[in-house]
Image 1 (cartoon, rainbow, N blue to C red):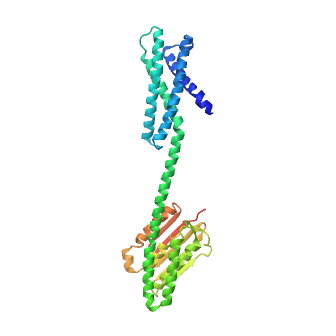
Image 2: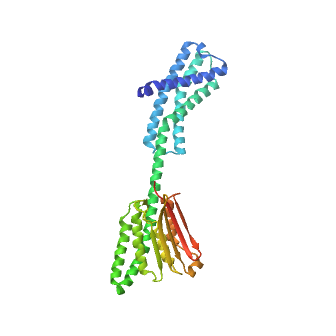
Image 3: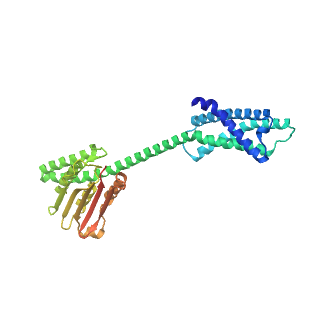
Length: 348
């Protein structure tokens, strides 16, 4: 194949140019080239073969020059620039060989001027074939550039998403830490064992957030984390609060992304009031995890109708990044309760 490409194909390329020119020219004037004197056809075919070898050599040299001097980037300007140089070189080559040949043959036949039709044919036909050859020869290069651009764009997008996710995830740390430290501070004077327990719970929570950074975690780890968080929050909650927590025992090794349920629980503890009833549940339904939180709210909060704030917005953004088209989040005020339900479709 390499031998054919290097030694046979250029001659065939030159003959293809020649026979195309002859076909158009002879059709226009009603002539048959095989009826002409043999030496004329022989000279024209020899010059055409010379053009074929020279053109292919120049094209391949230009391709190496493009790759060496210019970064391979798929762009309209890049293609136009390469093609313009190639076409210009091809036109110069064709006129250097075909024009003297045609003028010489016309002079031997007693013709002084070269017809404009011949000038157009020997410039246009080789140019069209040069463009076709460029498209075929450079297609693999542009395909490689296209794939490389797609890979780089995907890598850049993934890096940006990873950075954004880390930022959103990190925003949960300060709020949790400040609340827990505030609780421990007041426990130190009245309930030292309780303060120790709170410190232990806080340690577990921070360890999970700081060190368990794998992309997916078993849901039982996430529920264990939520259990520690709920226990820590109940220490600083009102004694009037009626808390019910129900986690489905079938939720064990299913893989989910971490820290997606925390904002809903955090929001519930923040706004609970009125009858001080707070319900938290996690269920496995078909191939979905359904996490629901409901809490009674005081009248002043109902009037403002503002819940969640930046925490809920961050949650929506993380869900959009981690579970595109695979989640449902509904949250809003219903009578005296604020209801939030998160559905996550498990990974197949």
